Amino acid sequence: MRIHGFTTIELIAVVIIVGILAAFTVPHFLGRAAFDARGVHDSLASALRYAQKVAIASNCPIQVQIRTGGYSVKQQPSPCSKTGSFTLPVTDPAGNTPLQLTDLHGVTLTPATVTFSPSGAAGSADTTIAVSGAASIPVIGATGYVDAR
Image (cartoon, rainbow, N blue to C red; front, side):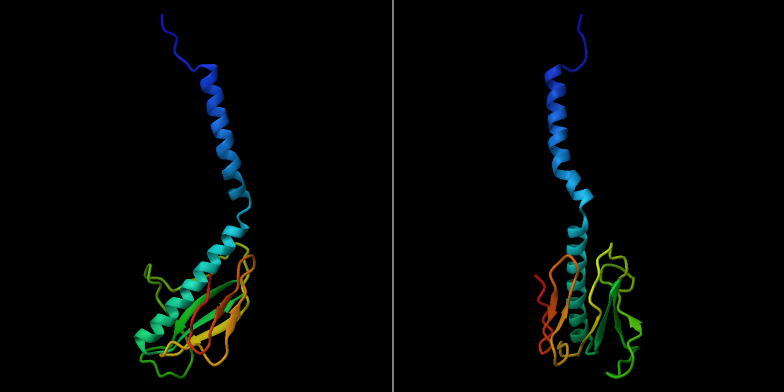
């Protein structure tokens, strides 16, 4: 007669493995602030870099409007006149939606406006955008270089 089931050693091994996995994964779910801050930091840096590339490719200025609770990337209505307001959203390359971020999961940004010229420059002065819980993002004005690490 065969008895089906688990031995005590097998049960103890499974409990130990589950305990080890829980010890490493639970802190990541409970303390997400650092991960959220880094995600917002990387997303904003990518949006700034993309805005610069769109400005160069389209030969039209592109503006990144950064608010405490998010950012948006806009351009002037077609044809670009290189003067006037930035009201037309730039399309996100990952989809057919405006390139913006409004849900920051508690992360705050320093309000700023970065306008990339058709040459890729971001103005005469450098701009530094602080991201709470992560490194700040400097944008070099003369070249438009986004120095996000």
